[in-house]
Image (cartoon, rainbow, N blue to C red; front, side, top):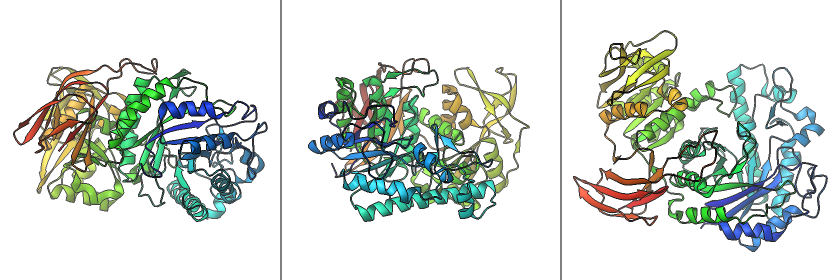
Length: 623
């Protein structure tokens, strides 16, 4: 394990306030119970949360009103005793206490109202906060406490369009909405670069990480040299959240990790509070590990800064599960399909600076649909046009108005033998016009039906286009007599092919999944390029990683029983029996790194593998 590798972590925070007697119950023994049970490779603990109140006796910031001793010192000494790196949880741009004493440095909206997130005022990027408070505190944490680094919370996801006098003076307004958003992104990058460079000069080994920097929230080339990327995914529907967020982070080619909330708390839509059982955490960990990331569990500290007194039994089991999959960590993914993420289109369609606010639904839905069709898929960022040829297919999920050089690079990819899959009414019309096709959108939005080979129908809602001719059709009703426009079209394009899917499949699939819709996409993709990996069971996520000796093939069981908002925690994942996998590549040997018994045979230039039972996550090494 490298000095700063973030493979398996426990995260503790509590966003301190003045109400509690902080430190009165904190002791090494309770912290050690977690360390001995889970055997993490790093820890994170609270120093300053969104209220802006420090949970330790800071000399430069605003300490909590009722401190008993030095809470943070106990946490740091315990981590060092066990040889563990320890990172500070530190809220940056959300700081309620600083906002009260420096109201002139609060981010304001167009009406002059203070901007808020997570219940706290947002600090302007254009004031003196960073140099007057944030950097002095980070230096204090590095020098006085010897902390390994900082995990900055309340950062890019808290940035809003700032209309304060400070911002307007710095930005030389007035600006259009799009210009203002772009300048805010530039200001955030400059702020993050200033923090990292200043800390690197002051304490070269101090690691600066920012929650959600260069992730799905900020889909850009990593201009700031962060040692690792990190985020905390949704506390509900966490497996699917990790499925998407993990692929966005993996795309950046840097070490990364994702944190799950180890509980469902008051943020849940119906206010449920419950800890997630070990089995649920296994499944969430499996999705992250299968993509090469590190995994963290968030354990909520007590309001007095102590570790909750617990047997830690579920974390012992989760530790066993994660540590058995050490070989997955840091291995790059290999996939057949690149699902394209246009930063320009995404930013144009979101009124918030970095928080997507629905602007990525088409991407999330299209990615889930192609994965449910059981193709291996990566997210491909817009700046990564030089990587197009790594994929058999590139899928464009409803992005419109992309820059002309991006569109031409995608068309050149198809000209040179690639398969370009255009999803969405608008994108089909736009790209069709570029290659001489005159497709027209149907008026307004509406509902059409697709028919499965088993005779069943499923609806698709949104915008549609008429691509004039095709192999199959939509139906205006779930009646075979009510045929409508073609449901897809595939054209040869020089050495490659272009597939037109003239409906907003991604946006709809994000809200309403159906095997009829994923099979529809699979039928189209198979015509373009048959899958390299075929499997005889549904609800299994497939991913491949490049290893020194071959390929790691990950199978993650996606069954979740009756998991939904009414049942946010679950303790059983139903096993999948008699799984048969055919890999159409010339591998000659298979072994299960996770210990299962597998049988295999060579077939027609490939290999067929029989797995008697998939519990949650099986890792097959193909060599």
